[in-house]
Image (tube, rainbow, N blue to C red; front, side, top):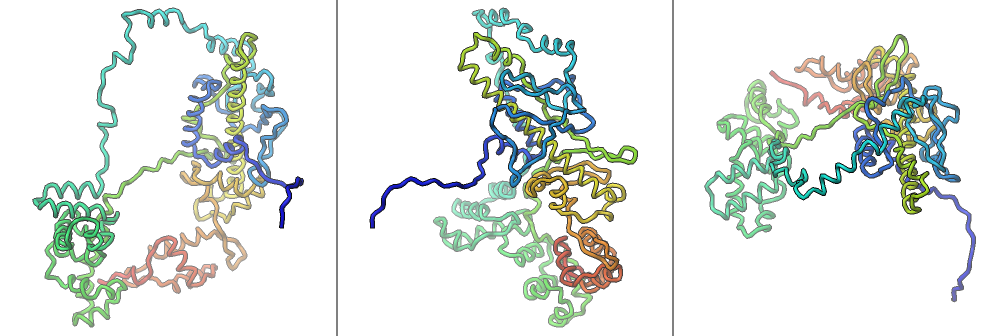
Length: 525
């Protein structure tokens, strides 16, 4: 068999993401803080971009639908419908009458629709004067630097400790245990083995792995590792270094002086019955009454099953609302939170350099490339705002009862409902609502929390599953702790209210809310 080279033509369709489209998709799923970091980075990297001063920024009462022309003739920067397509309005912007069409030949100054229109000649002249290079006294500046006796600011500033050195940091579990180990009188061999044991503790303070594995990782016999473990188990927090929950509870009982209590026998010899709350069987095996078992159980419940939990690193999650949904008269108004977000515009000086005939071709090409990058960024920022505004607008229309009256009036709503309303792909809506928060009359809520499935009641009305979960939670909170409600009883109560659920569905919703079963919730006095 022989192969011969040949030429052939093949017609196919494929989606190619340009850097501009990729940036648009990434910006859709960014939070406000992430977008602010991106804009600040672009300001530092792109000299064509300028930040408006606070006096020049004025926020429009509504979001204007502005169509930004493409800076590159013949290039289509709109997203395909299957990816992230938004309908751009080609009509003039009523809220920003001063916005003009961008010309790719001379790149006139561009200002986003959120800034006040610079329509008057006096204002343009004022800005031109404020942005001019003539304000800088280059002569005196250069004379200072050329003066032999002049010392730069960098040489005058003395080295001093950074501000970060004065900030306190949280102490981890391993740091705390190693500090105690350094205060303990042990041989170097036992100390090294104890340090290895501390390094093998998980976040709960339990030992991961066996003593044989730790002994094999270093030049220690098993006897040395066992002695090192007994030392670590004497450290604070009590119960640390245990190999399982049973050993952890026993360490705490012995440390607190309860070694002669019946609770030690219950944990050591009858841990399975204790975990399953089989108190009558446990009382029968021990030959005591159920009341005595319950008294010992109270003591066991005061112990800490996760001794290392309080040393877990707690990272703060900063939440800043993307939009404010406020009620004015009988209507809701959507207002963007632009506090802390730099407002951008195109620098005039580079436009003048483009028009200057003495500017070299290399410089003109660089400025032209930076202009295109800046305009793409501004267009993508505006597209992000338009998309978020459209999604929030439909959410307000569908969830008006919730905004007026609270969680019990939350209506079922799916992502595909909003997707069909605004004519965008489902993935676009998913990117918009994920990780973004809205300040509403009912509090600061993540946009994704507005979306929930629904179930039909006896009256044919669709009810949100989140409301059903809330009802289950309220029933459990109001139950008798000595006789808690079973899943069957909760299902019967919901059926009387017109909502038929199976026991399995009730158990699933209860597990999703991390509520234990009736046997675990039962408290015997």
